[in-house]
Length: 289
Image (cartoon, rainbow, N blue to C red; front, top):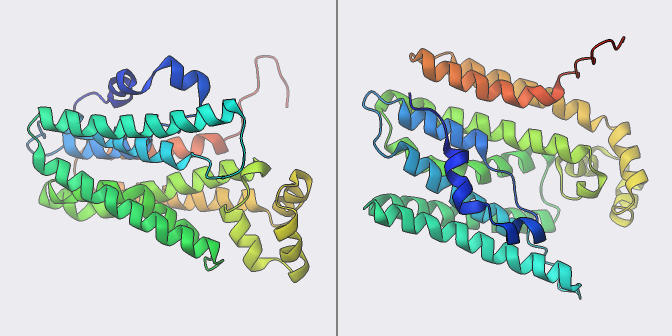
């Protein structure tokens, strides 16, 4: 199997001083891209364009994720915030446009169509989710499932171009890795009260909390001390950590059914990467615990 080097290949398209200096960018979708590349490069006849396909999907995903970071607040903002907002728009558009250019140069017109259809479907799913969230018609588990679908929709088209045996297991692994990513991000949000609104913890408390807490939640979402109290009371971090462990175990169980030892080891490593933040830090030299 080829060496995985997609993040390094993507740097020439995404690392620009003016963007990095003035605005925040989303994280590289490494787990899903590693999964895609591993499948494409591990066919009985390794796919000629495995690196190209993985690279362009990473750029499209980064473009959409960058646009998702744009603050939709219509109120007055300062010059710095306005510049950051404008750069997010331009950066997202730029990353997305590179995917067309790279695929057209390689004569991959059909793949342009496949990925473009995936982008359209992701946007439709986002609108549905945002509408349901605005109407408060989402449970905590439904929220997770919707987010997994958003993370994986762009990658589903590749199930039709991998080997028959691989195509049967691709949707399961894609969903599993997507779920791990979503829960890992929710776990990070549980440690940042300013990101609590609309998170899994928010929907869980909205469902399980008392009437008084729900009323308070609608008025005090911006108060870190109040949010931290709720997070601790409902043990949000521990619940999410357990969900993450279960999701990783499911991915590894699916991966164990794969005949290729190389691919199985790669998938096991992807799963294990989600668990590292849950492991206690090793004591420094000479430190006693």
